[in-house]
Length: 171
Image (tube, rainbow, N blue to C red; front, top):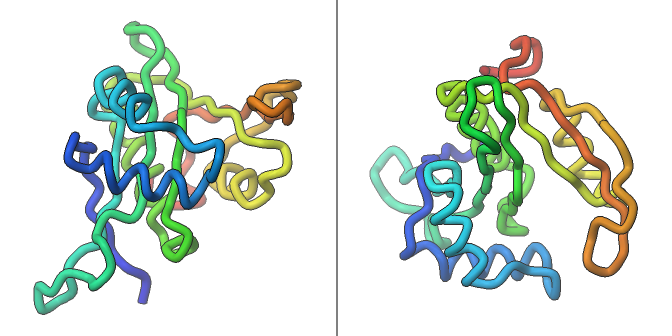
């Protein structure tokens, strides 16, 4: 049985755990605490965390409950505007268990309520698991962004409408 997740807005008290997840996911390229605090302020209710639900008996998981995060930011204020998926990370031992899907689905619902028309992102060309995940959720390749990453690696710009046919999931 797949774990269930509570998706909620990130809090300042989550920053230490978010940093741990970030370092485990991205190593030397990890964002620092100051950048996360900036995004917490800038993106507000679209900086989300996934926490494991307690089991049926109300017992919290032994491992730390917070297992991932997703940051999205709105661009512009007009209805039909776009949003950017800035970053997403799931603790390594928690990957493939639905946390990223829960975070992305919650983000898309929140963006739809705010009237956003599109969600855009850039993913490293060599990150095949992430590209497959995004394609599963209806993201389409827009273009190659040469030298996008700090060490010069290329990225792929991807985009999808916030509202999409429900053929692949619950949205």
